[in-house]
Length: 406
Image (tube, rainbow, N blue to C red):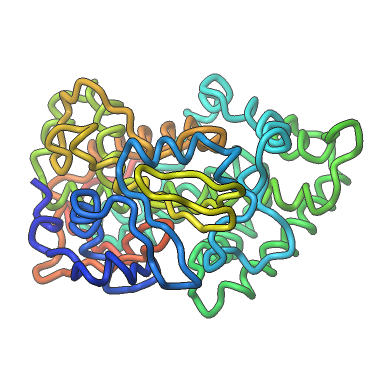
């Protein structure tokens, strides 16, 4: 049983019925209990916050809206979540047929076969990071492992970017992903300029055969790709490659501490790890919501939606809908069907899902093998970064000390 969720209690009904605010810090801990109440009592709610928007919480409705791109556009989103950047994130902020052009451009570099080539180097990186703290018997997991791991893996293996830029770009990506952060606007601008400089440098280098080369050489409808389209496409894969995997790892280790029977099961039956990752992503997915804009009149369940209305889809709620998942708040390794939406659904389903799964599997294989008796400090209370993505801000862990390997 998810004890944190069960004990937190939902937000008041008048708040979520009429005044739902995705930016409210007090929503972070009781998120899942609040969404549960909404699914049962008001599955399509109308909020008066941020100039008004709909909140969609049931699995069936979220699936319907996400797949109906002709009615619910990704090109506009929810005004309060729009990034203060000068370029679009591509292909996310585009609709078909334009969206398909950019998706086809990057997809070949993130197939299962393509990312499998990174496994040996990924495992060596994971081993090196664990070696940094294994002898001490404690770490701040987010700072020492969860955030540096996907940053370095992505920079070194996926886009061949300078290692000395990793920390800076990871910081810019993290801040840019937090819309109400006071540094967000400046970090978007910093990320934009870094990508322009990176692209210019790569043009002067021999081809690497990676996704960056493909983007730089691309033709869009018979014309060369523009500078802004290059920045927007690289920007999206950076944001998708860094922050969400770090968040997923933090959420998984936090659950391991609260439910030690899960890591015990996975150590005794390691063949269950791929299925466990899918169930953990269903329960604690880092990508919790996404925005759409109605471009024509339509309906969501029994609610009429007008052209121009903003719509917020809660993947996190759909993934715990008991109409789709029996006993949805429980970790069930034997779940017969797990059509979770942690990577989205429809045209904008995450292109990097295969890379994310590889990184999560390799990381958890090594963490489970080497970190025993993982625990949180007495009295620890989790604090989340939680808006459209969700992540523990810090996660101090203790464990039985071990030996370095490298």
